[in-house]
Image (cartoon, rainbow over all chains, first blue to last red; front, side, top):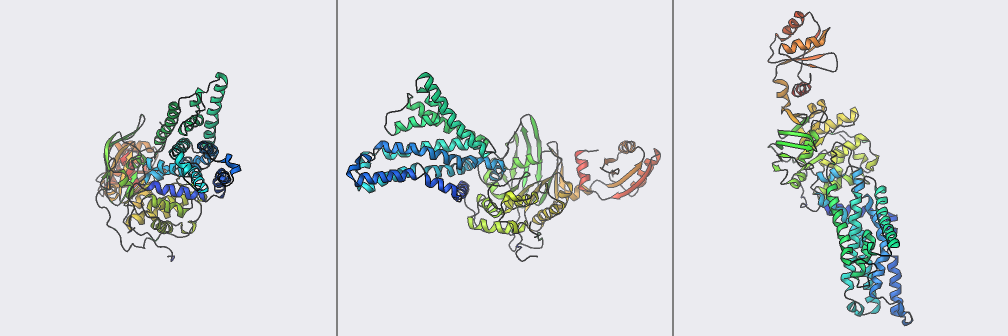
Length: 279
Length: 326
């Protein structure tokens, strides 16, 4: 018998409580992504707008001639709008394969044969995308607010614009939840991460194109609810106390976002199963 | 692949008490896929130890396992696993069982040791313990030397072994093995059967082996549940099922074999055709004169017996009798 053959031994140690498997999944998913150099490069690039804005804040706080660069409430709205492009790319890179790859490798039956519920599985996968998206939206926006306070040497700006704290939180949350649940739902419908990426990009561009076409034909922007992106923009304007950019009730814009998130979760709960039944 | 073979002689110094009650009970269990009935009022008891779940393709074996795992919601009936109700305590059950699926299954982008450790963590082991167990289990299943290779580069036989490793890593009380030798070459198949046999008979692991391969079940299991067309055809200890029905003879006749089968059946014998030109004749409650009676039957109808040999009853006989293949 080879000396390294230890046979099979029974486990004598402790076990963790049920309901924590999603954390294991999230940790493994995050570690897997941050092991990829190209992805790290994208994440660093996603922080470049923050660096530019931070320099602007520094210059405006240091040199009175550059006071026109000083941040206003809408600066943070514009910043989060800019980050939308990175949200799109990170969502595709991280999210497309989250469930599709598991479906391709028949891993769902492995996960669900462990003490993992389908809700926990979804939560674990969602948390991976959520964390990366928060780190390119909420985190840099909050850091920007903090940077302003540090360079200005006072909390006056924050005190005068106290609404920015909940506004950044709420809008980032809407942005991140919409992207992550939609992508995860699409990922659960296919075994190909590439196809999921195309579907997500198609959904994004097609709905925007449809809205713009109707806007061009009718001259009205009340069809913004057709595009998740436009609905989110409308919602963002309201959250940041700005003039809404479309002729669409904020309630309808909010409803569109909520329906998309709820619909995605409903689809996920239907698709994440140990067996696929074809009748 | 590693050249390490399983070592049945290695005994655990601290073997746990094996769960001694029935590991699985199903009562009046019915499962449908749309209009198709996959399980029809299945009632069966799986005792502790190694139990074979035997049946042809489409008999409902995998459906039964998937119902026990909670993947499928039965139309009616009840199930308990390790004394726990499947509907009421699915997570507690899954924490204590290991499942080796029939189809290829892995988690993409991982090497073997990461994959098995990850499965251990999902089953509730702390990270350090899961990693240590992953190494041990991979050596046990014969993948010690290949444990840092990406799973996507594994051969079919290695994929079978890794599925067994992920099912074992958390030291389950009960293992569900769905077609464990599927796609393996003869050597790999023998090694896998040796592992399964070792787990059940030396390592105190209860297991249910679902297979359509009779020799696999006969080698690894002590009890069998035979399924056919969504129902349980028979169940019990293999030895008892093989030995309780009298004598078995291998018979070959010259001429119209079908006529001999018809005659023997009319005379009260059970006759099963095999793939070769030899038929197996069961003489219920047979005595020493059974062979003479068979000769006499053939002679009466002017059929020549070219070969008649007493045979040992096998699981194949049990299976053939249970599913009524003639």
